[in-house]
Length: 318
Image 1 (cartoon, rainbow, N blue to C red):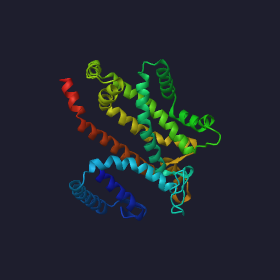
Image 2 (cartoon, rainbow, N blue to C red):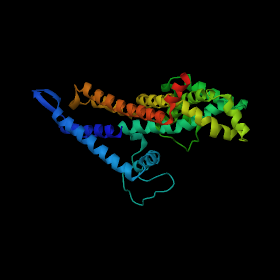
Image 3 (cartoon, one colour):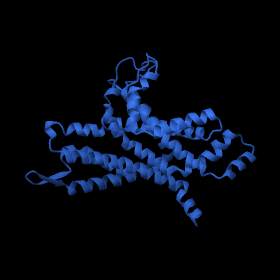
Image 4 (cartoon, rainbow, N blue to C red):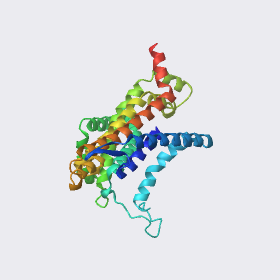
């Protein structure tokens, strides 16, 4: 998966230089297989050799999760020139500050998707647990929030986040349009994840609760150590499906004035120099979306394989 992504990135880098196509007639160009095939083969061999050597030297799986978790804050700090809102770490300007209002393209798409996924998962789990709570106030609030978010389209949530969210904040606190879009997409995704997690909780047999209580565990430990891990393990496929869906739904932020990858592609084909290149631009955008979505799906399958979900389902069916 990583090697394939590296090969795709190599093709994207070399594409503007005309090394991946050849002209067979005036105005007619075809992919240059003589160049593409050796490049992909060399990238695959080099990536496989490097991955094996690194796997023998360090425990890569243990480093992947911290690396992914540190990637987003590192990116935000670099874009804001180390200005984290408290004090400026660097006394002089090292990098120009890139305000969230001018973020665009693949950067905006990835940031929106990453923030929505990371923030909505714990919120969705809390909403699912709150909906199963015996406290009427907590249960009523969670049910109301979930049903409201799931009962309207995502574009409605985005408009509400852009227009109504500032009304509930102090006057001295202003949120950028990107942050408001992140808040709306996080709430929308959390509502759907809450129902997915609730389905996983209902799939756990009552004997699991009784066995955990018989060991002397309180309700918090029963849920946190016994019930919730089994429930999340059961609903890994629909959770990943929701993550893929919200990644593709980032294209809707164009309606609220943000320029994601698809909006940038549409602006490119409107320029005089690129008139008539509609198919190429949209094909490139489709390939990018497919590559990232397929990578997420493959990661889900690998997690399922490690957890033995399909094997357990087959045994239960037999």
